[in-house]
Image (cartoon, rainbow, N blue to C red; front, side):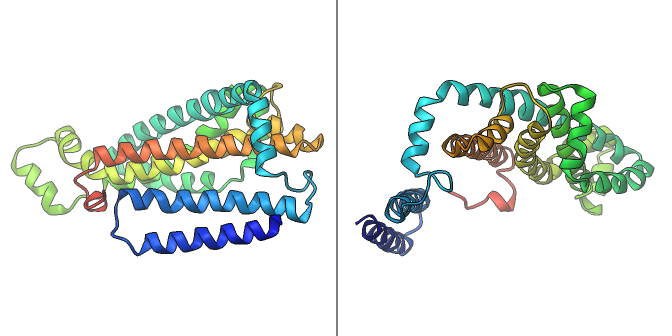
Length: 280
């Protein structure tokens, strides 16, 4: 019975999305298509688990995950604050601001660009599982060490994007500023920083995902008795997979909201850029 319901739900959702795709594009259609697909996928997941009798240790049903989330709101909120607010967000802000300031200095002195950016590419390639235990030993087991991991992860991607953005002006534009007797700082504020905004926001959006991943993974190498990474690692050992999935859902929602907030800010700031034109 559940298998049949799953097949019917998949067929119905697919047909509805195909019909919506043929309609005139608009905000309602753009929101309805992924929403219908997501609801259909969840229902098929539920039907498959129940129909095939899959063990909850292997794959809990969405209803079991939702029930666990409803019954563990206190734990989930505590983990959210520890990992996302204290670890990821603080490291994100510190790392991005430090990278932006460093990019201004690097852009001012060309020898720093030639010397620092290759080092940045090297550090950015370091695996998190290698640097996380070291930073945990340096900064302790609380959120400060997770923030330090996040700083390392977001600093160089943000730095590279900002430096490249500051260089994204044509010779004609710079010559025009010189004809107005504009100095370095005036040119930076009036021309180069606005032109660099798409690159800067690209680095900010990339850093949102890196920050959350870094904070969660760092908690696997030492944490107090709270945090998403701590909860996931201990719950797997206890075979409480419904709680593991609940933490994953919270992390996914937080990461999507984080990225979406930066994307909305980008749209407001870079409304003039061709990539933002014509978007509803």
